[in-house]
Figure 1: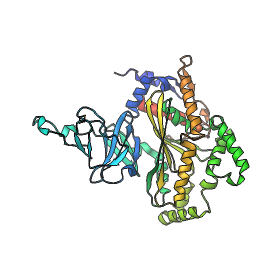
Figure 2: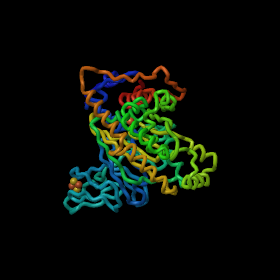
Figure 3: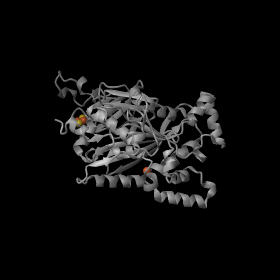
Figure 4: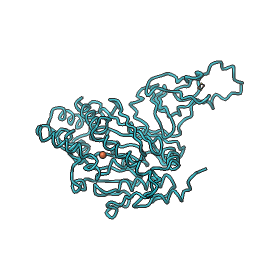
Length: 437
Ligand code: FES
Ligand SMILES: [Fe+2]
């Protein structure tokens, strides 16, 4: 039985404010895991993580441990990582290649499509034993969009393309920037766990008021370093550190766009040196020539000209096509989450590009970053503040009177608007109670 009625959930979200319980109440979190992560399209991994027949990787889909496999014919499958015998987690490896998956407890063995292949001493079971009904449970819907794998635990619902809507452009842009049109997940993954709600991470990614405040120490350090080394002032890391100190007026000039599905993205707020759309260094010229050979001049210019930073695909990922990076948030409990930060190699691009990707991810989103550690500290302080029961509401009204809503439901706003958070809560309400805010 639901602990919280739909009308009570709906009462927690208003156009300009939300109740603290949406972050702090474990019963609300449990419903989010049922209704958002347990039904909707959730990004689970990239096809290159299980590239060849019989490759697999394991991850989490909401509260479910899962395995994504390719069978002998190369078809993708999503399986629940739980043995139908007595419940052990069958696969412990993050990634690998195997002809079968064998449970470590009593050695039931499964084919890569999840069907039961064998178990020791089969004659210990009656002839009527239903082998077909004792495979690994299958995830009803697993689909790939240009190599990005999404899964849904609901057998029915809107299609993946409909869910992505116009935000599919962000994934297109990731892929189209590769000279071969192919990407591979590479370079490892950073994992950062924090004592705060998963939504804080998604909301912060396009909150452009906070950088100058939360990241002030690294803004000052970046400025001091750049002043001492003018020839390095446009390196990507120094640009990034200093750009967080832009004025509110400058941040207001950054585009902030949203889609009816709750996805949002922001324009690039710095764009010199390593990330300028037009560079003259040899690796870039080689790279651009390869793009032009594949796509022609006009499309190459359009692909390189789409200068965006955080592209949030609700509810759990943020992609950064300029740098080929991705962050994925994993909800653990109302007050605990993990951010997995990873990167992609553009197959066929000069190695220099992958080095820049690694540098960007390490500077912005690693445990040693001067930036993401500030964000995590503020998430934890926010969660602690939200444990207070003396105040109920959080305010989301910034620039609410300036939202420009188009006929198709997409929204445009000034960079420092809290529009993205309002839109995320509109999607939240839709998933949680089937209503618009
Ligand atoms: S629990 Fe898996 S074989 Fe027994
Ligand atoms: Fe930040």
